Image (tube, rainbow, N blue to C red; front, side, top):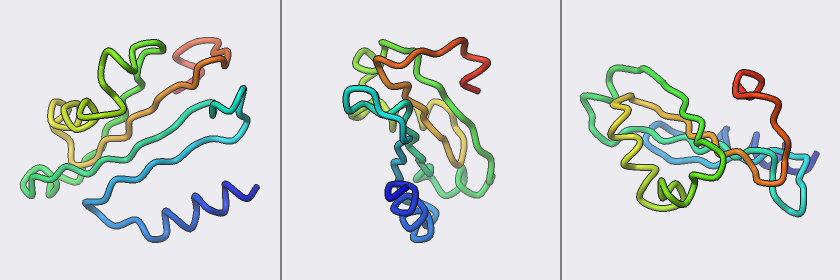
Length: 102
């Protein structure tokens, strides 16, 4: 419950242009079930479109896609959306299907 309060407080301070990371409860071996990273595009023209997309990183491809480093920004630029939410699935958790995750 404490982490939910912390996330809510973080979101209350969230302003356009900021990046924000959220983690789920229900950890397995210290790994959250999923994490969300909200990325607002830095280009003013793209940001003005006020659209949003969600990208679920395929399980096991986090490092290959460099999702913890510069890969997030590269993904944001490729998506060409004003806001992108990147979903990383936690290792060690069982997921029935991508449809259930969505």
